[in-house]
Length: 143
Image (tube, rainbow, N blue to C red):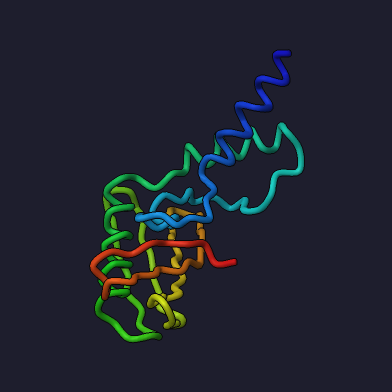
């Protein structure tokens, strides 16, 4: 019974961060910066990843700088543009590049975010989509 509750609890923690409905905040602003990206191979590996991701989560001020950099690029710059940010307090910096634009029922921009923290690096690619000329954006993981 105890193992079953632990498994259900861990599943909720892991799956709670997954969504296909979009978010008003880029996943890359909440990413953890680790060297071990991928699916867990066992329950113990999954628990280790949760602990590691909590420990290496981006500090709030750095996440804010990252978010502002994304907002600046998607609202103001052409495809191919690159912007970088630095957060000296935590020895962290990042780079965001606009990759592709797509139009249809809504305007979407694909971008890649890379965050460097001490000796660790993490890159995520996401879509930012708007249907009101950039007043609000929703963010989706690249499939």
